[in-house]
Length: 60
Image (cartoon, rainbow, N blue to C red; front, side, top):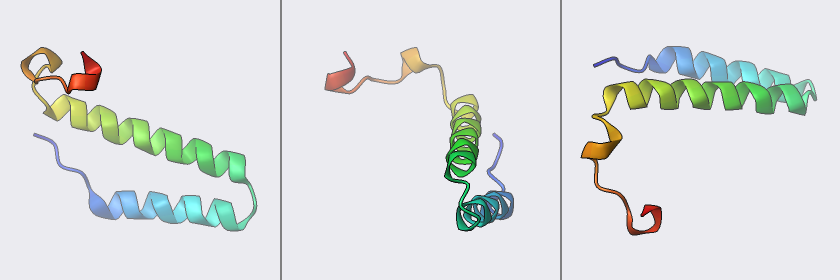
């Protein structure tokens, strides 16, 4: 199981905040989207296959 490096995530959030302060909203949003996808990919690698997890009623 891989663990999330909280310090690294915090540094990347600081970078996004710096980009926002500079006024480049599109780049900040894109950086957040990249960070989100990386975290979700890491999380899905740690999870059992989706077929083993019960679905919520709205996902059926």
